[in-house]
Length: 351
Image (cartoon, rainbow, N blue to C red; front, side, top):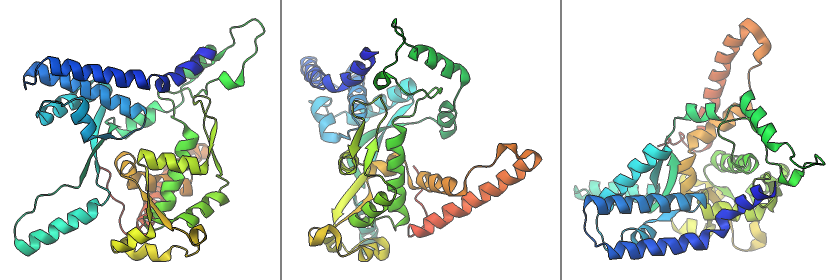
């Protein structure tokens, strides 16, 4: 079973090799001219797809300057290259490249609206951060069905996990978790902790003080975040996990001094942050990062919280099951509306 673990480490060990191959691609690009022909666009599109998938496997944000450096050197045909790459990602993998919103996208939009009203001229501007992530284009119903347990798949996984040595012993450290589904959950424990953190931020008015967030997580006994045997790391401290979420763009942390310079936050939530945070040192508040908005969305977290609070319907209730299911759906809908009010307004539509 040892090779499975080495395969899990392979992406990390191949990073330098991947970077070197990117340099080779750039040299190849320079050696074949800088025209905007079909072959040139197709070749650059394939390089962009490869680069995007590499960054997504690392859960890293792909910035426009990286694309310019490793794919578009000597060419100004970004739009057709991006369109071709989108077609490849969509038709081959069911993915799409999505531009993240600017950290202060709402402020940029408000400033543009005010300038247009004052001058009557539409001012050019963009709320995009010129950074991209790869996101699935599959319908949510398909993804949900692919995560459901299937007995045949579960039996096949059990056969694969059976010991093949003479003593019949199974090393628990090398045993991969079995889910019996077409798509195996990607670190469900860590994903659950992320959903809880995003939910706490959302229902606290879209931002929450550092001490307040840590207090909630302590009450939930989340001092460490556990990973499955698929990962080379079994668990990490909460601080390390929060830093990972910051780096990946799921969370954004800002000092209260910076927030006050920008006029506070929507709903005046920054005034509610406890004054004794960090022992009188720098005080922080947490918000959603651009990746959370683009990949998960407020509606998704709202439904997650609502369905958890309402609970499931008992399938053994017979004829009354249909009626109870409708009642549950109404309760979930009302709960989602309540979460939107707690967030300081309606939940942002997932786009």
